[in-house]
Amino acid sequence: MILSIESSCDDTAIAITEIETKKLVFHKKISQELEHSVYGGVVPELAARLHAEALPKILAQTKDYFEDLKAVAVTTSPGLAVTLVEGLVMAKAIAVALNLPLIGVNHLVGHIYSLFIEKEEKFPLTVLLVSGGHTQVMEVKSLSEIKTVAKSMDDSFGESFDKVAKMMGLGYPGGPLIQELAKNGDRAKYNFTVPLHQSPLIAFSYSGLKNAVRLAVDEAGEDKEAYKHIAASFEHIATKHLTMKLKKYFKLQKPQSFAIVGGASANLYLRAEIEKLLAPYNAKLFLSELQYCSDNAAMIGRVAVEMYKQKMFSELDAIDISPKSSL
Ligand code: KG4
Ligand code: ZN
Image (cartoon, rainbow, N blue to C red; front, side):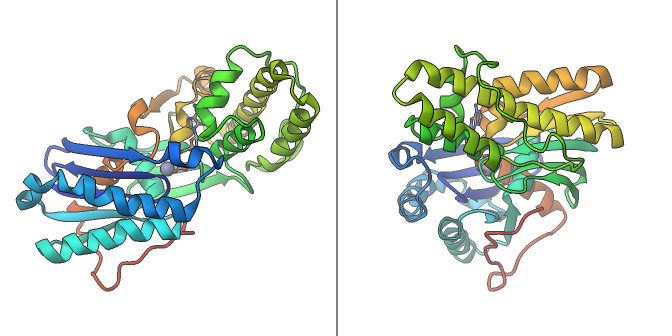
């Protein structure tokens, strides 16, 4: 079995995965959403302190598996430096104590493998990753053949939901809050401009839309009724931006198997719009189970199973975090 640790942002999670069967025998996650909610976003130092508290608590519940462990895996990139370190220090301590090899996992590869928890991997796949930190399209042929073909030039899709929710004083994370508010709003009420709609670039940008929403929120003042229309119009345009750029990309590369992963892949409007987009191509849509869309250690363990088979280990004194590294 492999013990895997995830602490790249505001979720502390540990999983135990059986190598041969890929079975997830243990998974526990402690989310810090409530603690960060008052600040309208993740406060790195607070996050690090909460990981330091939560990691040993969860680890204590995995003791019965220790004798069956063959490796320890940990998210080493990308993420917040101060929180990645918490996971890495714990992984190193376990590796030393139990004399196990270490596996450093890229969090974005983890999101891709959230599709394959307790399942066989299946490639090739075109993947749209929409999370709090990233918005990108990748062509994935295998674990080590991942090519990013489009990405955001500034904010991410999920982050824009977080920022809009903060403007409205709704709390954190903004994704589910905006989705809920948008349900009863008029998507056509606010005519926000679709980002980069006149640009030939196949890339994403959310900072302009965020600023347009800020003006609308300021103008609405205390008119809470207007907020639901702003939320609905924002969700519509944020999604339309993705589907318009994907449509452009599909002219170059026809989709066959398409997946949406990452925390924001839980968004129901996005899922429905992507389904509509894929229909004419007869392309299959793959999604992670809802519980594995947001950050978790099961996806890190699933990547680690493949890395273990390929002996992709890291030396104890060479393994390090790489907060900014991407795919
Ligand atoms: O993958 P994730 O858990 O963390 C990162 O790796 O960043 O993604 C978290 C992001 C947050 O920005 C959150 O607001 C967003 O996913 N999110 C959503 C929804 N649920 C979560 N965004 C839009 N709609 C949702 N339903
Ligand atoms: Zn993530």
